[in-house]
Length: 241
Image 1 (spheres, one colour):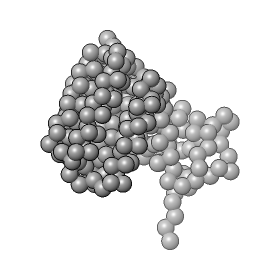
Image 2: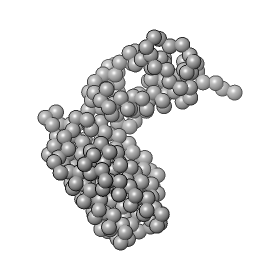
Image 3: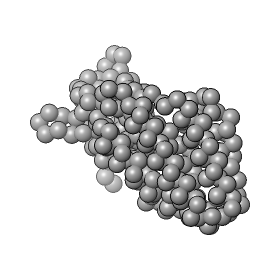
């Protein structure tokens, strides 16, 4: 039976450089990818910054092989940009990138909203309603609202049942997160987003796929407008959609 190369595995009991962080045994490159992903979202690794593979290898207590595999994963997600002979960099997102992401999300999620309105079961509608009720309670809690809002959108896609759309939206939303902590939410955007959700939930409750799709498209259009108007001078932004 084939075994994994020892260089790609580090157990919790394996020795590592002083001060390093040992990662659990298993699909190591996936663990590394997730750690890097969270560092990027938290801006511990800034957009545009060079990723020092040697430094991270020491910090994680691993060889550079799983680290490079992890970087390939993040490159396919759009979070990392690989530059020939220069290495890996955290991706920078421009206004045009944001507009393109919102456009694609609007297309995919409006189609999902129509499907949900036409075919969702009572139990599935209840799941979405429960998430919407959380949003109603969190309108003054920006970070909590942001997290629940994403859960709502992903739940709607899961109910629609197109696994390819789910995967595409997951990757697009990762790109959206690149600039979350550098953003300024437009004044009143959370309340506006919540009102748009209310209208969408009403259309879904009425089993109206045409209105549901139109409302979701409008939701992303409003989100993009807020993102553009709140963008800082470095042209990095994130808004609720």
